Image 1 (cartoon, rainbow, N blue to C red):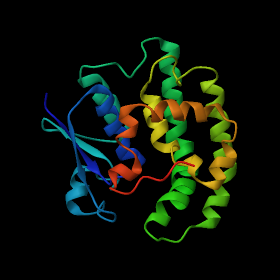
Image 2 (image 1 turned 180 degrees about the vertical axis):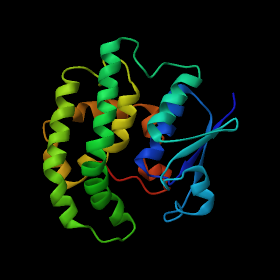
Image 3 (image 1 turned 135 degrees about the vertical axis):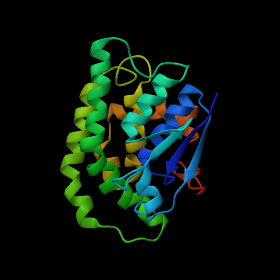
Image 4 (image 1 turned 45 degrees about the vertical axis):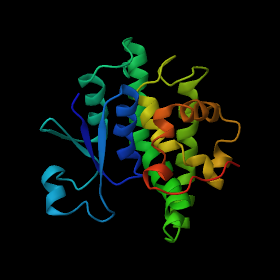
Length: 219
């Protein structure tokens, strides 16, 4: 089986998504790590004209946009399907993926997670105004995802789907922040996060593992 080469900055939730998909499918992959500030170089823009991450290469096939990438990995390789066959379950998967991309990313992973967890690792100043401004939308996101999860083990039903992989990449840092711990207190999403954290794919692709940092001690 030919490997997938994933290009991007280690620790990015969008870069983590194809790594999670490859791990779940048993697809061999290599992470071609990029440095911060290198996404606007001519070499990168030749493959990703918008200067974002990630993009992949597989047997000479180049692809960017994380959503498209994880769908490709799911469809192009054997292994457990990460897309439910039932139309309603598939619609829920797509709904969650849209919520994460449009609402969770800017409010939770970018504003709260990046400021509270990632910036301190590198000694960067926290944008307190950005964190405060993101809190109302973050609460809406969590309540919406709680409603969709309901009493199911995973967002689309009994099996892990692309929605769970995308969501965990953006949500797993949230409870580590004071604001996130407050928002998620008593949330059923905490049990979902525990189920996801127990999966080898998630454990092998944490921010700290991908960036070769010491794992935080459990509270």
